[in-house]
Length: 637
Image (cartoon, rainbow, N blue to C red; front, top):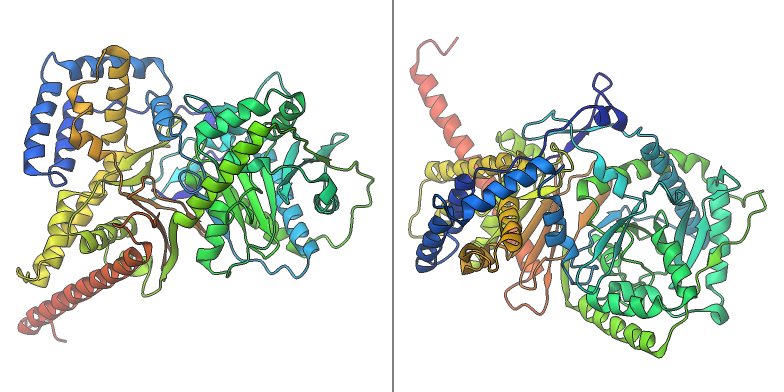
C-alpha cells in the first residue's frame, strides 16, 4: 500500500483546493491485457489440466465479437457516465453482500500504546481528551482544512482523493435481509450530529458534545463521563446488552433489528446511535496479559460476551476503546474508508492528546451541565432469544481465532533500503517464501493497493503470488538443485521486480481484480447466465484469498490488525519500522492447515534467509571488485 505524505506549503494543501482540481477517472483496462494477465497469474497456481480448460474458456470469452467485447463496451459506457465505474460493484462485493459477522471477519483494529491508568478518573480523563481530539479533527474536516495527501513510494507526488475522510464520522452500516446498506449521515435536511455514544457496562449513553451552541471543553467532557460511569454502575437500571446483536452475522442481526424497530422506544435509541459522531467504549479490565497480542485481541473482539464483547456497536464506523487496564485503540467498520485514512485520523488524535497532556484535566467542570441520557430498550422474548444466540456465536468466534502479534527485531526497512529494494516488495516475497516453506505451494494472495490517485478511488489487489516468486522460492528450498548464490540473487531480484511491476499496474488502475469484477457484474445485468469464465474453477479459486495481506505503516506508537477473510486463510498485516518489522498474523484454530505461530516462525526464518542471501551477495560482489581493482595498476595510490 503506497505510503502517504502531507502536501508541503508550496502545494495546494486543503480539501477545498482538491475540490477545485479535477482528479482523473479510474480507467477501464484493455480487455485482452486483463485476460492475458489473469492467465499468467493463475497458470502456476492450478493444475496443468485445469489451466488448459481455463485457457480455452478465456480465449472464447475474449474472442472478437464474443461476450467479453460486449461487456467491455458496456463498462466503457459506464465509465463515461459515472464518477467511478467500479466503486459500487466493489463496495457490494467486498462488504455489503458479505453476511459474516463484523468482528474479526471484517472490522480492523488499531491498537494504541498501553496507558498507565492508576485510577478510574485517569481512564475518563484520557477518554475526555480523545473526544476533544475527535471534535477538533471533525472541525478540520467540516472546514476542509485537512491537508491533501500525496502519494509516496511508487509513482510518488500524485495528489490523492480525500473523499474517504468524510466517511469517518458520518457513516453507518445498516444490516439488511438481502444485503447491507452504507448510510451517510451528511444531509442538507437533518442537522449535523452533535453527540457521541458512550458504551459502559454494556449500556449506551448519549453524550452531547455541543450544548447551547458551545462545544464542550475537555473538562466538561470529563465531568460528563464521570456521570456516565456512575449511572452505568446502577444495577437496577441495567438493560439487556443490545450491542451484542451487532457482533452477529448480518442476516441474524437484521432479523433481530426488525423486531426491535417495532417499538418506538427502540427506534429512538437506534436513531441516536446511528446519527452519532462515533462511539467511545469505556471497557472493564480484560483480565489477560497486556502484551501486543492480548491488547489486539481486546480490540478485535472485546474478549467475548462475558467481558467487553457486548460493550460495542459494530455498525458504527468509528469506535474508540478506552480500557480501565490501559488497553486503548480503535475498531472500525471498514466499508466507508481504507486503513490508511484511519491511521491518518488517529495520528492527528494522538498528537492532539500528546499536546494536551500538559493541560490534563484534574477537576470537574465549573459549568452546570445536563446529565447524559441512558438509551432505553424494550425487548420481546424473541429478542432475548437472539441475544442468547449472538452470545454463543461470538464466543465461538473468539475461541476460534488464532492470533499473534510478532515483532521481527533482527532488522527493519533500513537494511532493505540499503539493498536498493522496496521494503513492501521485499516483505511480500518473504511472506510467499514463508508460506511455500510450510505448504510447498503458493496460493492466491491479496495485497491492497490504493487507487486514491483517481476520483473516488478505493483499492485494487496486488497479486503477490507471481510466477517469478515461485521460481525464486523453489530455488531457495530445493536442496537438490544447490543453486549458487549469484543465481539465487538474480531470481530474488526478478521476484522483487515482478512484485514492483504489479504494484505499479494496480495503483494506476490496470490490475485485473476490479476489471474482472466489473465484467462479472455487468454480465449479471446483461445475460440470463454468467459466462463460463466466472463459473470456472480457476476463477472461483482465484478469489479465495488464503493470504490476505496489507502494509499499514505508522509513524507513531500504534499498529493495525485484522482477521482472515476466509475460513482456511491467514490475515497478515505488517508495519515496517527502521530497525524492526511488526507482523500481526491471524488464522482460525478449527482449520488444520493453518497455524499463526508456525507462520510467524516461517516468516522470521524467511527474512533471515533473505538477509543472509543479500549479505553473501554483497560480500561476493565486494570480493570480485577487490580482485579486479587489485589487478589494475591505476587503482593503488
